[in-house]
Image (cartoon, rainbow, N blue to C red):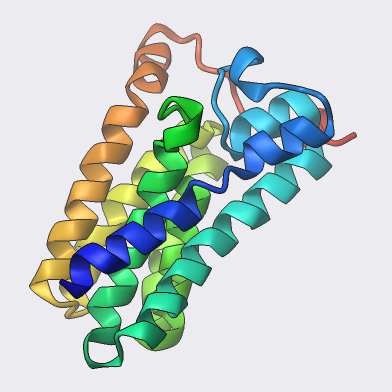
Length: 204
């Protein structure tokens, strides 16, 4: 039962869409601009660096808040409760019910979950997985490539660091979901039409 409750708590926290909130503040509906996505990348490209940073940090906090809240509620199953809650936050971010289930791709909220696990399980987990994502962006200049590399590295790294098998299964499912959500990006990468990431163009 703690799994379902944690997942639901995380989902409703994840439904707090920072991209939607930032868009309301700036009188811009990100669902109708750029890629139509409510995540950091679209906020960065459409609204600039400050809006992108606010979206990014807010979405990271959702994963952290969900993780530690459910960890406190279920101390006897704290690790798995936190992971299920973090997973719920990612799903809430990706599929917010009040926005017709159209949200972001969960990258920042997943970073929040990873950072939470850095504190309670292994710092190496965050160093490796986030490092892989950063290197993916640095070498390819595509956020989508770094994001996919980041997600794929999570279950692999969790396996070698000795995470519970149940959590590795969850991370694998999240990686598959992330790849599916990036399917349009992969098509653009294949056709050579994907937008490259250059930070200086986004700073306002």
